[in-house]
Amino acid sequence: GAGVSQTPSNKVTEKGKYVELRCDPISGHTALYWYRQSLGQGPEFLIYFQGTGAADDSGLPNDRFFAVRPEGSVSTLKIQRTERGDSAVYLCASSLTGTGDYEQYFGPGTRLTVT
Amino acid sequence: GEDVEQSLFLSVREGDSSVINCTYTDSSSTYLYWYKQEPGAGLQLLTYIFSNMDMKQDQRLTVLLNKKDKHLSLRIADTQTGDSAIYFCAERFGAGSYQLTFGKGTKLSVIP
Image (cartoon, rainbow over all chains, first blue to last red; front, side, top):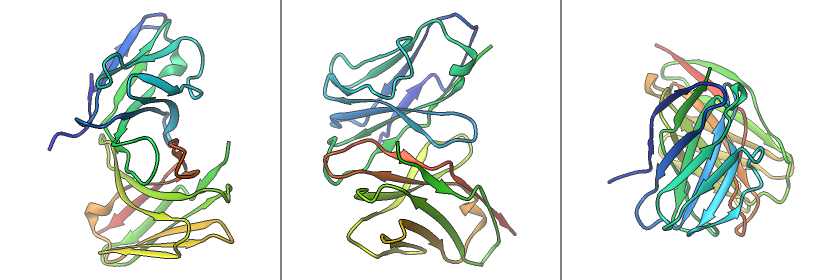
């Protein structure tokens, strides 16, 4: 069956540019998460969507980061004025619901490199 | 936030058992997870344990939880070269929560 997909798989951009990263969750999953994994680290939570709304964006590092999920399915993570420190693998996950006994299914990630 | 600690590297011979350890600091953690990450791939959930359990076994995998010491371990029996990967311990703070907090991961190398 189709899992979580993310595009692009790799993105190289210059410092100061704007990037968009896309996540397609598993069909029917209402909850969607973004995590960031820096080199040698475990994933760190960025934002959680329940349906169309961002239920918790406390993990977003600053106001250059923004995410949307307008129709409650596909989500886009947007990064403005990219900096070299934004280089990381951005992971998306989805789950059937956001609470209770559930599993978060992860996509393969988008590797972002800011030069 | 709370920390999840793991040793960074483990090397074992093919056919031996591997034991990957993890400590966590928040006693209110309800769910504890083990994820596997192979090079260039996403995270794959291997198993999880609810905090009111001491042990969970699933084929070659055994998870042990010592809630008093906040210690979690993953034992892989008959380790194979295909088990070479990074293993992450993660915790979630209750049924009403959703954030996973991950450790830095343990890189398991299996020597043929």
